[in-house]
Length: 144
Image (cartoon, rainbow, N blue to C red; front, side, top):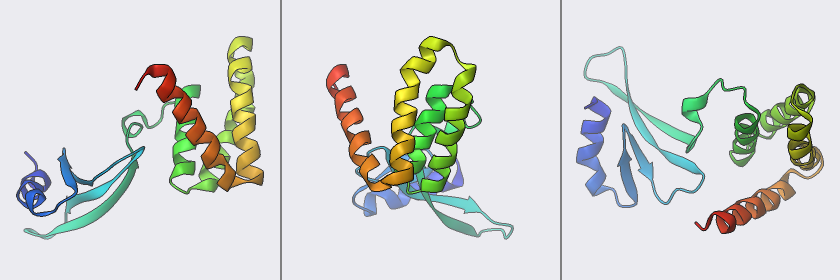
């Protein structure tokens, strides 16, 4: 068990609205993004640094993945975190790279990529409603 986890295991019962998740103390409730804290070691013995973390719940372990669905999800997560320029860069590159995929994949993805690009370039605030409607549709389709 890491030092961070051992310390947070002692602290967590005293901090309402948190849950221990691995080495991180996560603030609840979470939606698509986890917010919390992590204790990192320093060069000085017996000293640790409290680091605030904000991360998407499900993409960190896939860093470097070049697959179209992952990159689309990564772009949307950057948007949801407020990194509009990073999201815009990802979707612009996706639009260029789309030609490398099969015609069926192009047909399925082009509309989504173009719609997100339109909102990122013209109405970034309006994109949130589109993403939330997609999420709600998926929740209904999957029976979640």
